[in-house]
Amino acid sequence: MTINIPVSPDYKLTSDERNIIVKERYFSDPTKAPNWAKRLAENPDADPTPQEKWREVAFHSTVERALMDVMNRRLRSSDAQSLAELARLIQEFRGELVALLTVEGNRWGRR
Image 1 (tube, helix red, strand yellow):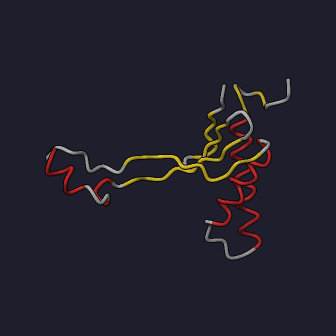
Image 2: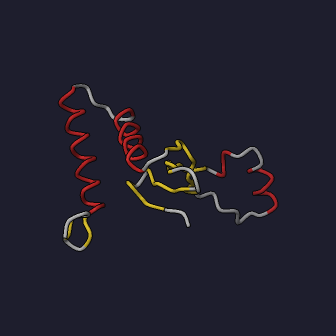
């Protein structure tokens, strides 16, 4: 059995028998494919809508390390210009994790 846990709209955790896998969402635009003109000629009703896909971006031995990787990826892609901004982003991410770990009003690990 494998896990499939959304962490944010752009990241999720999955697993195999040895790893926790960080996957990142991206969109594939079929109109940019080298064979798009041929596909369109063969099928004028071909769907040009970008398709949501997920790519494996990291493999970790623990969920904790995988979550830290997701946080670091989000920080690297941010527009933060100061340590205060980075601290705010870290707090936001931690808040999102707390919300994910909160089930029916009870925090994970507490009864």
